Image (cartoon, rainbow, N blue to C red; front, top):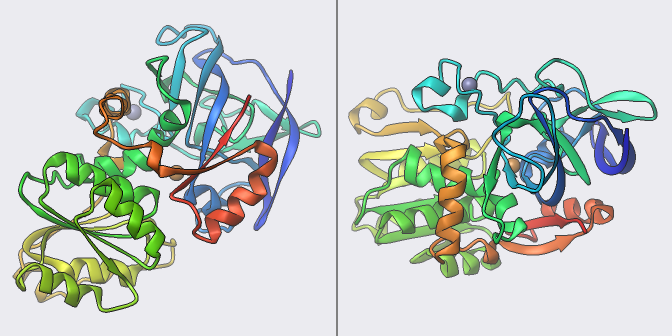
Length: 364
Ligand code: CU
Ligand code: ZN
């Protein structure tokens, strides 16, 4: 049993940094010394109940670190390897994994337990759960080998952590789910970590007009730096402005990266006839998206949901990190603040206040 610090969500709207114990990895598992953890909206959604989970739960699902120990039968990584963590495992055997849809892997049942239904983390002698088989908002994490991929050792761990969730969700939404074509026009509603990644994916895919929409002028400024050609402050009439910018046609590809039904509706209205509207933002379980029963077929639009950027993470993480190394994917600009694990409450306060493109917890 290893003692370590972890950020634990105890019950609705109550979380704290705790000293917990971590058991050794079992068969098919890997012990990772965590080096960087992204502080993501989904962690906040667990805390505030938007994503219902069994408490208590160790937070964290966006991270990277160094393999310390491997359990029986693990051959894909070895101690010393640098790894990025995926919050959806890739079992390689289920219906979806066999059809290049590892982002929908059937092993991804987030009940807080490991694959064998047991826990590795204890708080005060009691088993507790981990988020998405990872729970890497902690100094160490025992994770399934099917949730990690080795990465080059010269890659910044903060960048590698981001690829584990927000970056892949966004870049993949543009490049893989929507399959943005060269020369096309794009509108991205929401310029947080995911929205900025959609913008970058659209830029890499060759879009000529990329319109970022957000309420924060700071975020819109970053959007411009990473690839947006135009920005709109959402305080005005965004749909009208997008129409004016596209000769009354609308954009080829609309994206929503917040998770608010009314904003999905705006993005959908800003998408042209025959265009593709992709929903990336996650709303609440009790919310509904509405489509006009006459206009949806009549306008010939495609409406898509994008789960984890349609990622085949074992291929896509190294690819996105290669784009990062080549300077095509700017991940450094997206890390706007780092924190120690003890500063996790501040990191969440800043997230709620909309202060960061991405805050990252780093460990020594
Ligand atoms: Cu996330
Ligand atoms: Zn699978």
